[in-house]
Length: 491
Ligand code: BG6
Image 1 (tube, rainbow, N blue to C red):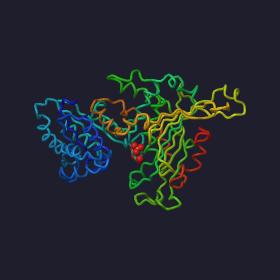
Image 2 (image 1 turned 120 degrees about the vertical axis):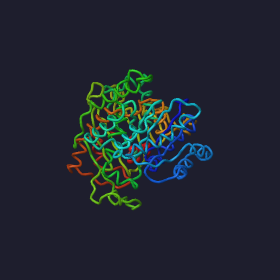
Image 3 (image 1 turned 180 degrees about the horizontal axis):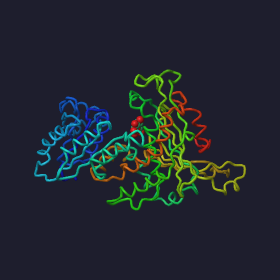
């Protein structure tokens, strides 16, 4: 595609998503020479704005992240223009591309590829989608759509969205983003699991006792209360990001990890995992909502101006599910996620059974179970809790770590590692869909969560208050400990 011309239409260009995530990712691709020479980024939205105003709005985020690259950033921004238009007007969108055609054909270019980036709420997908279909498709190259969550709020609303999008575009034109799939450690799962004979044969119920997927943020909803309150933590990160991680952890090996059909091979395996999970019931879930901390340094969730005083939306949840297939039957997969907690961390913890020999060989000594930990962020790492003999004259086992910290092992690569969005947009430009979510995965994921979400909304269970910057409700710790007991040695 590098030899062809490219127009990227960023729909909703005046918004936060475009500024904070899309623009920096496009810059990182530009900076690494992954964008074609003949390229225009067109910011599109309803408000009145000049090219220069859009560039000025995008520049500070780029300069902050890439200090000392001001000239390069300006060169990048010179490829950015702004065009105003209505989302439901095929005429407006067509107007933009009538103008673009000339640029696309500069230097005798014959192939024009077009990427439509939807940085807008789903309520306008249908309008803008139809407008694009009517007025903006390239006839000489590919047309691709990048769509951001939320992909509905439950099974029914997802079906509606899916019908709209599938009615307009083909699956190979549609790229549903879950940015967690673009994170280094999640991309690493395929290699870690299937390219290592010390992991691959153990990755099942015979060796694994439990799997815990944890998402912790140490900030509250911070001005996003309006959006968050109608979604809650389960929709915000569990039904999508953590479920996608679970699918990558639990899936069987894809037929191949390269080649044209790779995307479907991976997604076929992921969707099978999701189909094997029964819908979560209320008794398998504990919820929380943060209150102001003792020192009053932050308002409680319901004290946020954008949140109703009597909101019962969960900002924390812990739940358990089972993958009912031969590989995983009986192994609990626990998910914990919360806002305003004591730390910022995303990790997966896989606990193994203690070998039978340990109890017989070391009577009276507690031999901790092995654990494999994948730290997704911050500071990507893979480490393995392992028992070794206490060094020296003593002989008792002692727990230690085989530790692969990316920051120290791959310091040169990690210093300037691309954002998840950068990887994903590049995949989209290359036509690789493996790290995007397929329609049937979204449907299967909603089926797991929809009954629970409806029960919560019907008021059948209320969140328990927890103090901001704590571990979350004590009841959640107690609940999780039924499925996963952390060894006291592992602090
Ligand atoms: C988003 C959620 O999808 O993911 C946010 O809407 C959350 O609430 C964010 O903070 C987390 O992403 P990351 O990449 O910062 O871990």
